[in-house]
Image: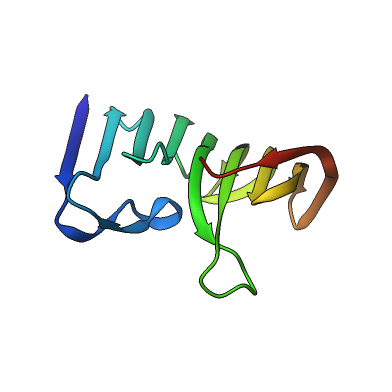
Length: 173
């Protein structure tokens, strides 16, 4: 079993960048502001792996991501199952409104299982789900569900969106 973990705590000190990939964020920390950045990964004999990456700050914002994989057989001849989970609450720039920010909440989950032969995926099935709310004032909560099926060279994907699934009011404290 191979295990790696790290974390960084920064209190004050100005500009700091945390996270990686989709969780990446840059903050300008005041004297009493703080942020904790962390990552951890585990690998069980290349059969199963799990990685976690994320951050949380003194404003209550956070961005967490889990990625996992299970391999039955090998990547060349076998079944490979993968998943990706993300949960976040952050304050992001509002597109088209320079200098304005809004709260952005999201949750997403994607999973896929593929059958492989000679290193190529000849069949797979996947499922994805996301829920997203962004802005300030009265905002819509939007949900999406995606189903993916692939057999040889034919790939079919269908996404259903539920816009205005729920309307909520977001106010700044």
